[in-house]
Length: 321
Image 1 (cartoon, rainbow, N blue to C red):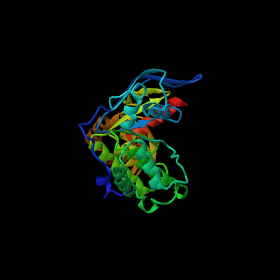
Image 2: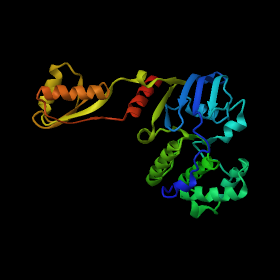
Image 3: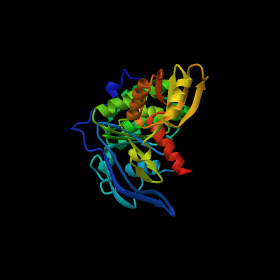
Image 4: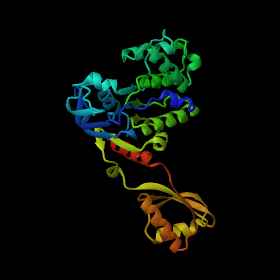
């Protein structure tokens, strides 16, 4: 995807930013399996919201409900201010949906695929042609515009799927594993494009297992476990940090003296080294530095072993087991 042409391919919403996504008490079962269990969610306009949870937690089911492709058993849903069930056409007109696997007609060209969807959204033909050309350039598929979709790689089909979701310039964008199959350059372009969309006032909800990537782009996060939304603060208040010092012996001796539970990292007792330590967030890390300096321990670095989203996800994984 090309960032230098993104400005021309992304049309700002006509009016002020509409309401984002609001889900209250939504449940959905498939026979005896309860995929969603009274779930609550909010995704605000003008922000990128990460949807995080283990396999089988209900993420895709929730996205299908938001896209108007599944009817919830109970609860209320509003997408850009519209109910996808009671007011489906209005909700779909404002929603761009990109599933985790792009399905298309392999005999159609990339251009024809996008023109077909533009026609479904009743975009005038002349406008649609310009829009499609811009989007094909944005997702780096212009040279494949008139080739059948069957010749596209998985990553290229993912990019075509993103263009399809954007063809009608939606106010709300629902993305299920959008970076799957993308090369590193396209992943960077995706992040830049999604940030631009959010900055224009759109609502972007992204589900992905590439947590490091989500952490770089997301403004908010919604965690799901066993079909229920989980408040991030209740998942974990502690995370593992990598603590290094010029003297491993001085570091471990001090930690033992103050009763801190640490695990060996690397190094020798008489030289520099590190330990793994459970720390209560950034405030706990700052207090650790203050206490170590006061005790004369020569710290050289302090960093979380994993990002906040990954730490939260690992907690959800433990609960799943």
